[in-house]
Length: 486
Image (cartoon, rainbow, N blue to C red):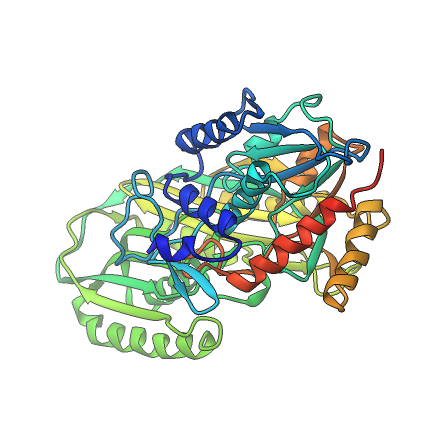
């Protein structure tokens, strides 16, 4: 299937993408891809280094006649989100991504594709290897662990780069020029609870919420997609109050930056309430499917009889936990009053695990306003402290303040108009980009982010548009030709 990919234009870019996607590169496990990129630079005879964090830096001298232009940093991240459908057998630690062409799109078989940010990586690799692309002096920066903490960008020290302009290739809409982004923080609520034995005269079930669309918890939070952790909690709380349902385990969601698509709970129901409970679940499934018919057309609520052998949450804690999850903010918290249609603050209840006397709820809170980011985080803290949780805040990173008057923004905006006879959308995004973090140690560096059309990032529906990659690549090459003099 990858041979089909290798025949696409521009061939160098797609060949690099296929080679990159043959290397397992989930976040926190980038050792192999770091070595892959390091070897790539060294084989080209270019100055190549790996900093103490694991970021790879490859420097290429300017093309003849471009020596007096400003040095440009081309930046992308090496890691990818590892998400798969439940019925897909795949090991992200050992297997390369299985890709295929579907019309004007490249997709993956049942897993994330890694176009976020593999297309950016492959683009930079192509420019580094080319002998005929016109460009100024380049510093290629391949960061690690962008998807689960941005530790690569956070660990990049000042003084390693000389570039005065950074082109971040990590935006997912080819008519956007992104000049700002949200910051984020990771609230984690944990604790223990006492357990109780399963009463007699109960029936066991597995309640499964699945088939939700999922997606990027920053770029797609405004679309109103269903959150599996919230939806299963909605069913469980009513079922507990109305029919005495008791919970053995809850296991939902995955990575913080992915809207959870699936959640399951092992439960028992008193036999006297069994028929009424099953009727309630069926009715609730119809109501929820109607509510989410547009955003999540494949959504299902499945109730399967099964033997439940573990112990149960004690009744008091069960009620408090379900109510805390119900109260926890999820989705859009506030829209920006300054920038039209921009989400200012949001939260994603990404992971819920309740099992064997221990519980953990992981969120990702985003905001372009630092004080509001902490306000949302504290509201989450307040909800879960009411059920006895210990709440910690980790992975905090700053947003990227827009600077629309910088020369690189003006240059690329004008160039876009000339090339495509239309207006670019110059805006900020609600996702986390590494620009703001890198800018902490490189405050004078002008920055802009752009990329091709990528849909469904952070979900197994991820796909990248072939024609858009061609558009993006041509735009980038023309930008490099026009980089201003020092």
